[in-house]
Image (cartoon, rainbow over all chains, first blue to last red; front, side, top):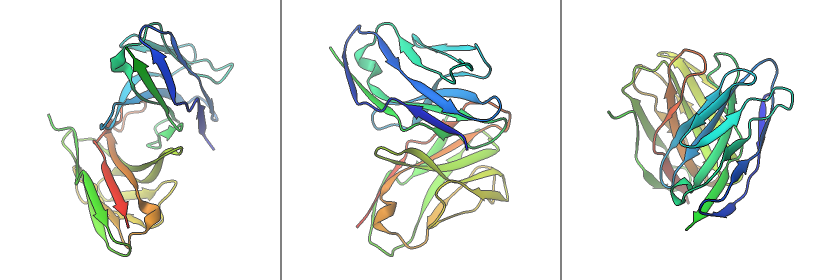
Length: 112
Length: 113
């Protein structure tokens, strides 16, 4: 079945540091890929997505590129802020399925 | 703009008690789903619905029931609570179109003692 493997952390960075969160997936066909973010005490919200190979999703300074050859969708940000402290989830869906398959999530803490 | 509303936000149950977690959305989304979030496990799908009158099981359905009598509401029922059901529960909804964003409620933190 479909699955997502991501860095689990927790990770602590200083403000303005570079961030990479690795995410790889296993799926048949051509899944759509997502990064969701969960700020403290809140539900998840979509950060960015990519629906086909070589697509780049971007939002709030974060980027991720759909790499079919390496089945990866790594999240990057060049300079993190304290407000980026949150839990980050990589996820996929297959076709029109309702079933979002999540990775285990990674907690990021950014210190001033 | 309410989005997805879950109630209650916190609940403590005794083993064997039953309860219903409420979920309502005002975006006319066809798809709704329930997840549980446990440390080190990510989010796991409990039940989902593709429209009113249609429900199906997800990855971890045992001990939970759902129904979907209207487009807006998708309650989750715990039939006889067990300590293993201590978790944070999230309801989500999205449009039927592929690859659309899922909107999540703020969650219900349930403790079963």
